[in-house]
Image (cartoon, one colour):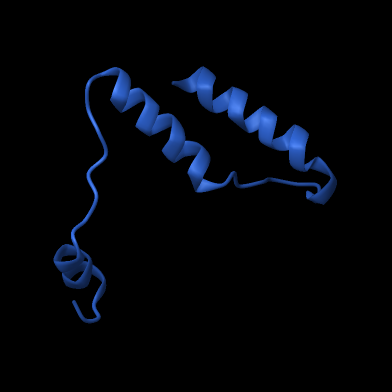
Length: 63
């Protein structure tokens, strides 16, 4: 999993270096998420998705 994150981070930097400023960079969350989804799938698992009722309970708003 670590190597997958490192590879995707390097790929992201290669593709977006022109728009990046010097210093510490945060990678997009979708990179972590895509690696996690693939790892879970390889282990026979999946990522749960909140229902609308759960989302409202956690974050407020209307169902």
